[in-house]
Amino acid sequence: MKKTIILSLLATMSLVLSYFYEVTPAESAELTEHVAVATISPLAINSGEDMAAALIAKEPLITLPAPEPEPETYYSKELKMQFATNQNKDLIETVADWLGTPYSYGRSSKKGTDCSGFVTSIYRDVYGIDLSRSSHNMFQDVKHIKKDNIRTGDLVFFRRGPKQPIFHVGIYLKNGKFIHSATNGGVMVSSLKEPFYRKNFYAAGRVI
Image (cartoon, rainbow, N blue to C red; front, side, top):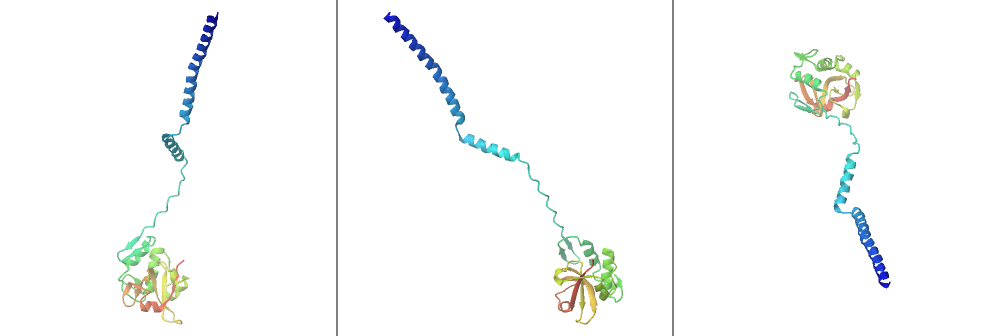
């Protein structure tokens, strides 16, 4: 009887031990699996950065307006001048064709021209504008502007004194240079800084 009881107890203990032997490893493996998933490694960190970069790459791109093209410069071989833009190309080429035309009072052709005849011819050929024939009357046709606001194509007027009438006109080019028909050289380029023209400069005008 005692042996039977002992054997029953041993059998029961054997069953209990076998139960723990089977379950514990399974639970251990499950825990290990969870721990493995939660483990942070350098590879995981790098993968996170790659994912962030991918998300950023998928963001819609902001389209910026195309930059405006830079204005093309224009160089005149005849005038030996570089202009910032080519918007006055027709004017520059036309006045350059008149270089060397002799001075002739009262005329306005390439065989001979005076200062106002030169200016009226240029404005008629380039812009289709008819200006007054004399420099004095021409000054009444333009918008008067300050000397430091002169730009290519504006007119420059000269007189010999405060009470004297305007006697000369030319077309402004750039950097203080203007083109005109001078009595002592015909159509040529001069500078407003030259003593004679600096002294007698009166005003500038813009044809509207």
